[in-house]
Amino acid sequence: EVQLVESGGGLVQPGGSLRLSCAASGFTFSSYEMNWVRQAPGKGLEWVSYISSSGSTIYYADSVKGRFTISRDNAKNSLYLQMNSLRAEDTAVYYCSSGWYWWGQGTLVTVSS
Amino acid sequence: DVVMTQSPLSLPVTLGQPASISCRSSQSLVYSDGNTYLNWFQQRPGQSPRRLIYKVSNRDSGVPDRFSGSGSGTDFTLKISRVEAEDVGVYYCMQGTHWPWTFGQGTKVEIK
Image (cartoon, rainbow over all chains, first blue to last red; front, top):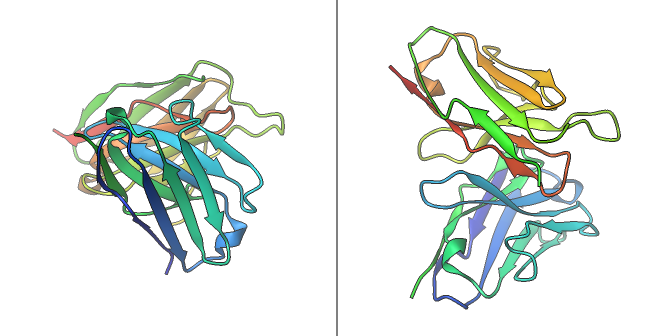
């Protein structure tokens, strides 16, 4: 069974940092592109970042460029999102998705003082 | 950025009746490889999104055949031939042709 399990969310003060993880199982993780998508409370979906299967190609939404860093460890079947200089507007549920077909359950990030 | 505009934003439907959601892009979604990277996602209340349709009209595995996608260029449609109770939720189109990838605002489908 395919599983994507996000972790690392929580409450953080503005200007703080968090590192999200996405643990993959049940499929050949190293063969799939991965994305982070977020959803602010009561709002729609927003694409955040993309990483190719090898990790050699990376893209970010303008709203997070320079503050967030996506990475992956294919040996550990894991995807990461390092989030720095967090702002109130980064408050959202963060989902990882593999190839847009498989999605995790999401992890909530709340940026508030 | 490519703007994806969905209509309507709210769609009350009667069980067993058809439903249709429009999605228009501010630029053509035809990629240089000839493909059109337009996806449709369903998000049921309290759940993660689920892809229904990829490349305009291809249904994902396990998606009921009452769901269909069509369109070309900048104009796309998701149709539900006969709405069932489990179809309640928010539907999003998303373009994967131009960076940054962008979603529509979402269309909330509810039962009358």
